Length: 244
Image (cartoon, rainbow, N blue to C red; front, side, top):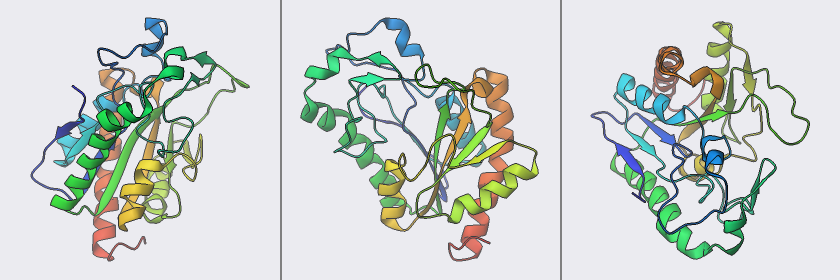
């Protein structure tokens, strides 16, 4: 499967997106790495697909999930980004990508994924776009500092959804980062294109991946996030897209 996985729904006020849902490497692509690296964060946002599926079911919301590893092509990067087809990630070399056919990977994987998001928005314009990601508690390279956040809310210039989400999460006692553990002003390409580019409120939800490593963790975070996403949608809809 090279196209995205699409979960339909009867409502469309919230559109869920999962850019790093898969660690699949299609036949014919050789990354030149040890197989165990495909189980690391550099290849997939661990737990993100299961959480997206759980939220889609709970909210009766459509969802679009990537079907290839971010090591094949990172669907949440601009086309001119050096990290679109990474030759290294978190200290690990990806030698096969040094000779990759860039145009072929864009045509096979990147274009269909983003066209699917465009089509979903055209079919029913959502009130909210929510991208579901996970982050590793500690990078292997660099300082290796432990990240204290349980959840981060990322946004770029459009802060409407983030300004609703942050106090709701903190009110539950969750250690919540505002554009942490990294900035949504830099790593927000999918939502920049489909959210801000269309004037649709959006946010990226980043869960620390050890918290959604099993079915119990996924169920817990789905219970936390379902009413919060519904509240964001309701407030945006009742205020003409303005945060309150």
